[in-house]
Length: 620
Image 1 (cartoon, one colour):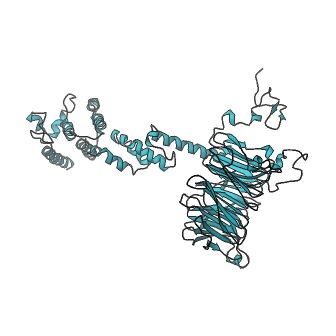
Image 2 (cartoon, helix red, strand yellow; image 1 turned 30 degrees about the vertical axis):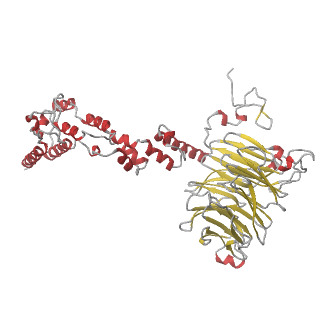
């Protein structure tokens, strides 16, 4: 029965193919056919199969394929022709199969093999050789990710050309955050560029986890005690009790001594630094006497703007996107920014009924500037267009519940609120999330007995908020559900500063400990300890800047003598710069004391004499 069914199936298929392959005097597109032999035109499919072993005679299905491709304007023509040539069956392989001894197979296997062979003959022109403009095919491939593009490149040579188009890989490279703003012509191979960027990212991530890289201490001995530190990108600015301001460019390792106004005027004694801030173009410093200096990080070291408050500056903030500076002295909030012609203008936004605790410039580029200020239990959203006859916008005010920490993004504000008295019965201290557009509360998270000391919303991943508390814990909240996803027992003297990205958390404590955590598993990767509380933590993909700032600015016994220009290093404070992108196996990243030999009598920075350096042993 099987042999009869197979014979009937072959006969029906034979007649069907004979009808489809019968050609006329004209070609497929109405043009005269090159082959005028009627016997060749009426040859059946099975007769062509018998003559396929002769290499000089071209099978008719290839002639049909060539007729289909006549007049084709697609740039894939050459690739498709090469693919057809490659798919032709070699005569040697057929001869090898004929010389091999026959094997006993079942009738089902014979039927299946014959069916697959017939399908291969009918489908010699694959589906990806269909007539399709290159631009339309590129538009379809534009919806694929890098994994799908890699799989498509293995289908055929024609698909490989499409899948490796520079436009597709340029889009993927920019979509993953690499080389933002670059054009397609900036790189000869964007696929290799994306692969190198991802490999470097994996190496940097491994270095972060294993604490592999270089550590550099940013020191200025003549500055005496460190007062405040700020960093942005590769710039680090520090202010000291000597009144000096120093700026480091960690990308090129240039050091700048910013000239202050009191040094130009030869004022003595010099006032202490109270606050410093820096962004990509502007650096600013506030002093104890109420003076504020502004420098340009691009043009020079002389102040480009200076103004004076009547009292000590209690808060200072600089916009990360534009040269806009907000400062607070007593109950007044001031905003300084350049006008259309580049001249700096000062504007008093508001005079609050209570002394201002802090100010933050709302990030984002807009025609006007927004400033968030808080004093006691009230939080204000101030507009540079605001007129004094109008009432300020108060979007949070609860009597008896002071605000302990604030952070803002372009659209939201996160407030750490301390509950007092009857408020402790409502679950303790909380963090409230407000919309800056509507000034309405969107979410309330947290339930802690300790005060929230720091909150980071601006640098956190989307839909996540990280905060630190006096109860020694670091918490991460999911803003979509309002639940706590991570809670870590971090610092036994309370958390002072914290920052997180999509996989790690870096926190600093009042005991001087800097800890790096794996967010997914909640485990500590490593920690570093220095004297004094950690007041500043800022990291990007490959670098980390930390600052241990002393609480006591004029400690007893800081100087050996009264005329000593420096303070003992245990009182100065410390700024550490970690670079995890560098190869730790090179000699430049090994401490100098470990690279000493017998010729050097001293090593390191403190003239430590090496009695027996075993690092380099010379053979006798």
